[in-house]
Length: 158
Image (cartoon, rainbow, N blue to C red; front, side, top):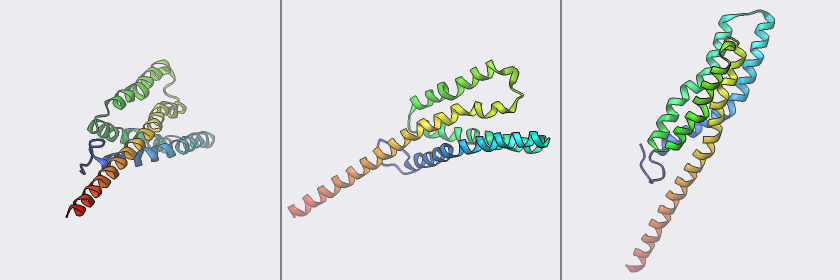
């Protein structure tokens, strides 16, 4: 772990989070399109379970795999507001949506809709993480310039 400024405690973890968020930001539209297209093709060709199960796994895996790391980084960086907003943006709508459409849960067409709040959250937090990294880089640059200035003043005195 690299410790630097008080702005970010672990810059490596935050940069990895940013990379994951960029991937999550670019892949969902493509994944949802492929998922819906594949579902219609499989229905048209009357192909069932094995391929559909793999598509479901591929569609569900990004939120399931990325969420623990998001929680880890946000807790480590003490960004509790983002942790609370995850509950309100992702978990609460999912519970409400599941409660309303519980009788239609067997229709796999609803699966991409369940993941929309997660990807929306990733879209929002990506801009915030970019800002954290920008502030960190500015702070590090400021410290470096301050150190260089102090060294030049010491050289002038000698």
